[in-house]
Length: 250
Ligand SMILES: [Zn+2]
Ligand SMILES: [Zn+2]
Image (cartoon, rainbow, N blue to C red; front, side, top):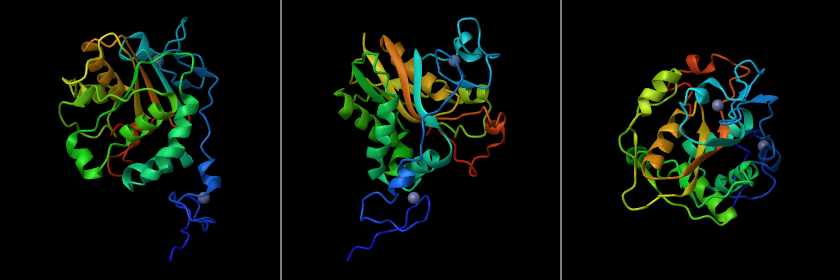
């Protein structure tokens, strides 16, 4: 016998027997990130135009700290979207790939042409513990919807400490040299879409993108499901403690 479960977000009994333990109302809660001011390159939202220069770029992009060419994301890493991502990653509810793929598809830059989708790699030990790579699952959803091949063009060259709780500069140092291009796949001259679940400062995506470019990729854009939105909690990154907030980027 099958009994409908309770929704893992709102606790209401599920009306239908579904492979997704979240009700239809909660699945419709995540909304696209809205911002009046954002960086034209990495699309980081800001409360005002002050951090942006005349060309509309933020300090990180201005000082060439982001090695990707563009970054797109669906929503803020909070509320229902954050809970859904945690259910996928930490409770391994892989059936969430499809509804989360729908969110990614709405953020997909339709005015751009890509040759392939590249999942953000997990270190093999992390992937072995979790049993799957959530970014590969999401990359597969994007590839299927837009008819793009998914290539594992980059790998983790070494394990990194969790990014949560680190300052921006420490995050960048932590992931320097963490990625290496795969020897089996050539990306020479390709336009790539790197897919990840969460973007925080862009340090991980930037290190990964640098590895892809060193292997000859012509263009690398990041597509993330959620992005840390620091507009309403300016010091949220500094106060996050590993273990309390498992953060993003892995
Ligand atoms: Zn619900
Ligand atoms: Zn920027």
